Image 1 (cartoon, rainbow, N blue to C red):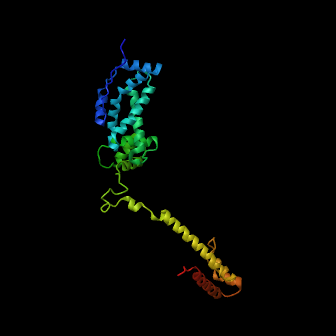
Image 2 (image 1 turned 180 degrees about the vertical axis):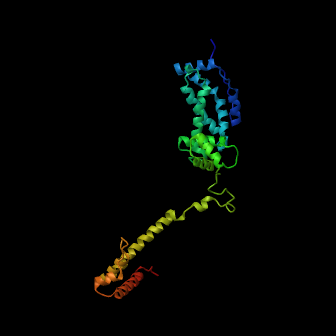
Image 3 (image 1 turned 90 degrees about the vertical axis):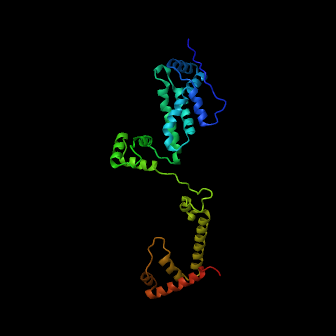
Length: 286
């Protein structure tokens, strides 16, 4: 009976990504018979050592897959870490009786974990929210024939192949082709670099400005009430009817003239005098 306990040498130090890759490339590959035997041990007895051997023998696969996603600007070490999670999930779900090699089964889980990581972290922007958009996100770079912008015909062809709209292809290309820009200038570049933070900041929404506006509004409202209280009843009625109605249906001079049985000119004079009185009351103290 062939033993399924293999030697997986581990170096004393894995201080860098290069050392890690060198180490996993030294792990022995499994034959189909060994893989099946280990899979049966794991499935039948939850054998942790069998799971360990299955995982270690396929770590080089994760490294190889991670190289396909180097264009997204994310650390390869992080991609490998996420891919390893997918590999472990695949090992846990692997059924040796189906006659399918683990490498074929694990590819799906490795890529799925890397895809999720990229979508969560790529430029901190969620660029793909539907299944079709995800497919477009991960295939557009490969399907472009050059680094130039897509032509209308190219966009339509890619859209047809991936089952999305041409405008979605153009939008995704624009987003993938964008460049990151720091919100703040780097130390020492403050005098030579105008960063977005300089013009994205809205000083009107700063807490201090909000408090000042609210305090000013309260003072004006209180001042208006005080000034109105200094008027006689007719003057107050005219000011309120002409300027302080909530429904914007201000009374005309003639309306008030009819109400009080005087001329429109007299109403205008009363209004003018009342306004002067109110302005004097609301003027800030010297």
